[in-house]
Length: 109
Length: 114
Image (cartoon, rainbow over all chains, first blue to last red; front, side, top):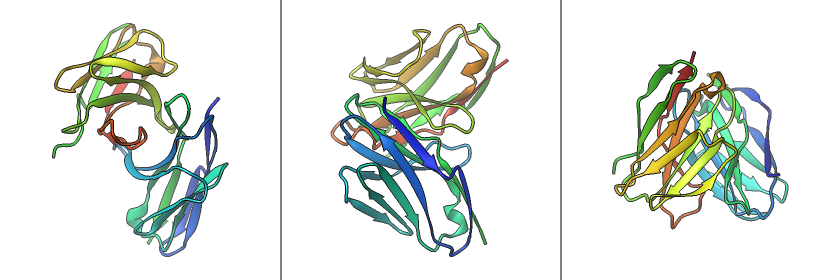
């Protein structure tokens, strides 16, 4: 069964304090791993797609990386506006998108 | 370019009732999917529609049903509501030519079942 596990559940950082969020996955026939950002009361907002181990994508202070078993979302010098829940999802042979439960990130000024 | 819009934003129903949620896809997107997101959880895939036909379904009972219309708008219907159906229901659209995980989500319909 396809599964996604995200850690930590919650993370509190000081502004400028870099860190990483983890997404571990098991999937049959990975077609893609996806990162989303979700603000309170809003729908998820697409950030990145990663297709194969070794791939990296960057956007502003965020960088996503992928191995055969996990993905990391690195946040460099975060700002308070980076506070949100970050969701990881995978798509495999079933072609269904499976989400993790997310990491709630709080960046304090 | 308009985004994905959903209605209503909030609604309250009682157990056993039926509900219809509506979604207008982003312009040019021909594939729509629906997700259920319980508090503190990630979205769970309900089903997907392409060209007015269901072409993928998650582990949800038949009382969850849907429609897609020629203009790519969509409905989610839930019959015989149960307390556990209380959740945020998200509609997402995409262009079928891009990866199936690159979705544009609406802001959701918050359903409370009493």
